[in-house]
Image 1 (spheres, rainbow, N blue to C red):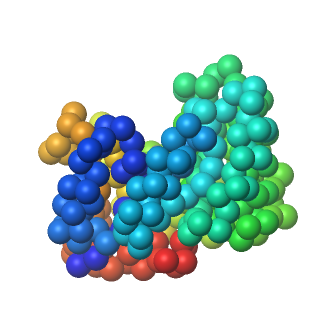
Image 2: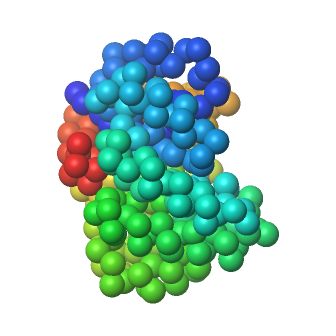
Length: 256
Ligand SMILES: [Zn+2]
């Protein structure tokens, strides 16, 4: 069985010194590729250095994370251009986070819109981080309807209805399902039953959002099969089926 972790941060300092071990454990668990979500210019060099040590296994995304948006956001986005052509598979993680960034809403909206335009110009999918900003998110996507957008909502914890609403806007959209799906109180555990398998991607968002039974510990890509097994159980299908479909989805969307 082959799996792909479509959103992780193996370069995060939480893994300092044990990155190779983490990558080896993931490969042993069948996770053949780990897509690295970019955050901002402070961590970018570290991310690319690790990616270049593990070509083909780690693949980079490029983008300014909403939690890193401040008054200097324009300069941060201008800096992205220099990294173009280094095997980037998506623009991400980009989006809106009003939980942690309630005082930078206007800047976040602008930075998000500009990066959607960038993704369309570069012909890349987007990897979207969305938290407590659903209405502004849909307003921006409506404004950007003329762009040929495709991508996924990472760490999706919304409802099947929210996802339907996104698909009705047009574009080629997926949901990234991570450890949250295994949490008892998370409604996505039920909603996943109503999201078609051909729209689902697997992800860890390591080192965060660790799935049950490791909740509370540091997350890592080797836990992807635990998330896949939960999805298989909820949908009443085999683990093999979930692995095959989600891997094919990731390969199609990210052209890997
Ligand atoms: Zn992330």
